[in-house]
Image 1 (tube, rainbow, N blue to C red):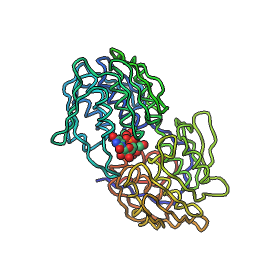
Image 2: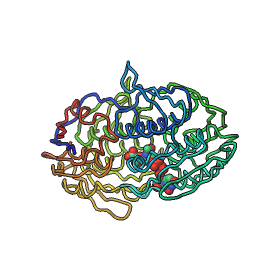
Image 3: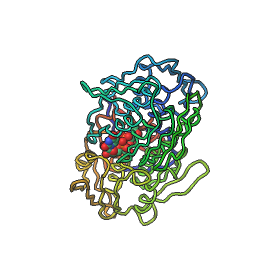
Image 4: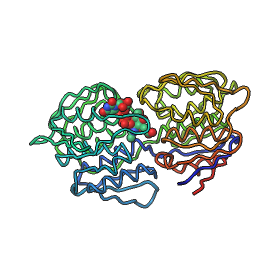
Length: 426
Ligand code: EPU
């Protein structure tokens, strides 16, 4: 297994380009199952999770070809479905595999999908996906670890679906299922994440009639058929937020291109409160630490536009180098503090009280982060260790970095190009 060796203490300076968003790419690739025409996606990031999703849709009947001209340009073609089963070995590796449920049900009238089970950050049920599909008329059965969903004779029917929690995945699955259902579907309490808007944009350019994506009420008028389209995947707001904090924790200055400051939502305000300053540029934005330095700041993770759970671990690393204390409260996933004991190995002073972590920052007295061997446990926890390592004194060895490869495209090359001392040891 590869490891990363990082020697900390260098300020990151320079320009860093943001890749296409992982969490937009995954549902968009699932959506390629919905049409017999060719779909072209651009800005597809080179990530392990994207490869897993491409493998899964390939097994279900999608042929994909990388096109010349620019990196990340891929043509997808699903002449006909070859299977309606998403098997355990693929779903187990990546929960987002469950996003093929809606498209399979819509196009094939049936979906047999392995139950994803728990994962490192929490139990993560899929009850909202399933009850939403039932509202559209699907008959659901659970047996031997698999969900079997069957559309009624005549296909799915539009319905009013109320989500008791704004689930990103359930909203996406239901959008894809409802696009060709008969009649009108209204999703109340829908998630508002920008990745949902990106999916709605793709579906609309395929001929779907969707209104309200990005708000908590989405209306979908079912159409008979979807056709081919060309769509460029939105920039990764979590990657952008991560590198913003990499600039912050090292006291550097980064020019982030291809990233949209607006996509940071409420996180921007919190990052400013913590002492980061932003300026818009022609092709993105610049970020640096204001003259007063980093300040302890409280955050609570919330659905978009609140502070994202996917930036919580990175913010915790940042707060280790701030002056004063900060209380970081996780409300989305119940087990998302696995970075805490690893950060503690690097000298961070953090105590957990239920769903909150109290960080005692060391800013004004200089960093107390020290290099150490640490273990990556999930994607965002891993990158928080990278941030801590960039600021720590001495060398940090991060093990199990396959987690990072799931969600950060060319991580070490991007960091090296802005002055970090990072090496991958195979
Ligand atoms: N939930 C339910 N029932 C459901 C679905 C969700 O109770 O049927 C709960 C979850 O357990 C959780 C909350 O609702 O407590 C929100 O979960 P959501 O469904 O919104 O999460 P997701 O769709 O499984 C996506 C991202 C995650 C990100 C979350 C929250 C993708 C592929 N994944 O997951 O990304 O943390 O939304 O924003 O889009 C990551 O990139 O590191 C990552 C984990």
